[in-house]
Image 1 (cartoon, rainbow, N blue to C red):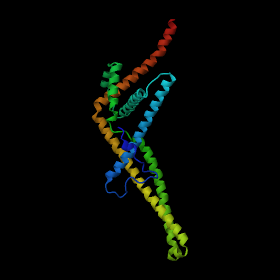
Image 2 (image 1 turned 90 degrees about the vertical axis):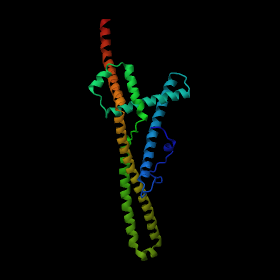
Image 3 (image 1 turned 45 degrees about the horizontal axis):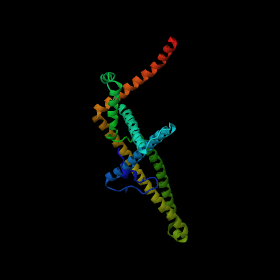
Image 4 (image 1 turned 45 degrees about the vertical axis):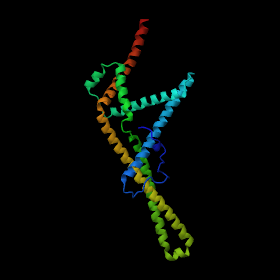
Length: 262
């Protein structure tokens, strides 16, 4: 996902901001576009926050070791490391969808570490070409939906209650108790506005969940199309982990025998 200033500057339409689109707008694509912009804005914010964390970690390491480095060099290293980490997370997601067979794993075990690194890096470099993963945002949208539904139900009950109380005054009561009638009418109008705003937020939240589902389907389809490169990257990552684990298992034995020999 590439950064777009228009996404970063997009105002959230919840909880208190103006609605992104009208509920009765016949063009549902406008609603989907508004939902997509907000979701991509959230994802870009997460990406920028992660980059800032990598930058801060590198800066602290250089400061601790008293190493002088320019801001441009630090920024370039942080960008590179953040991209590598995103690529690794991308491959972890791909590994849940594509599993290399025994033949490919056997081939990968014949390749040296440098070659496997090339396989893995080639697959990870596709992270920006693949449709973004928004599935981790779904729980947040569903939590907001549940909260908004509770709020909307409360406003519906409150609006009905205020309407009943105002009707019970009748024409005579409204004239005789003008101040009370005006208070009820003002409360009713305010409650109706809040209930309509809540309904618009619910519609937008539904659209966001739909965008997440659509994006996930597109992501899965793209991964299937890029299967050849991606599955090699997954196999390379698995074999490299196997070798690292084997290396760690060998270290205690080597130390033990070295001690015994001395």
